[in-house]
Length: 261
Image 1 (cartoon, rainbow, N blue to C red):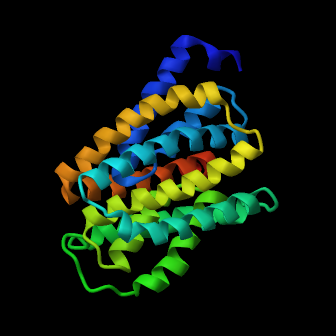
Image 2 (tube, rainbow, N blue to C red; image 1 turned 90 degrees about the horizontal axis):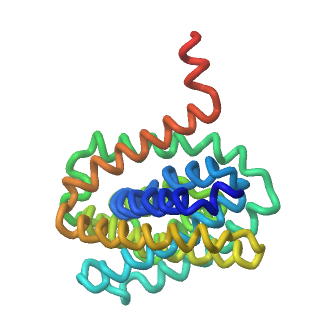
């Protein structure tokens, strides 16, 4: 743990959080950068995930507030799904402490691959508002809490899942979908963080330093959402999904297996 308390390494963690905050606001997947970095600092996995939730919550907060202020989302439109996302994530964070999540981990690369292919092969998806395939009430009471549950239970790619559900099921344009996804991800982060705080798993010094970088990155990312539009968001979602799949395959030794076939 001494390496974590080294000022130089703390500065590095802040810079890593800055990059993660920027990317996560646009496409999700910021934890792909921050969690492995925390584990490289020899922080135990549960504490690494808990500390990551602390810093990512600050990023989601500043991004959501910025998007609200710029009127890309309205609180009246997101307050109800915000609540169901929060409830779903709280349940997921409790359940993960009582069961084995290894079976779900096997499904993640297939789900992420489906998201990437959807945005890659359907180039018009999210360019304009379309007729919803699912009603607002059903989406809020079923889809949103399920994704929130997933974030509390496991986590990778949650922002991308929220964005995809808004585009594919609610017919949103990609900018609105991304902005809404950030607010729902804030709710799921807050719920998960609360559970980890109660469990005493958060490293406050490390998380605080990273929160500063995350705030700056998320703020710039939210401005990029507003200014860059779907041209910037779509390729990032696709790239982040494929990178997360690659990381999963590498961690589980599948790439080495394929190389020897």
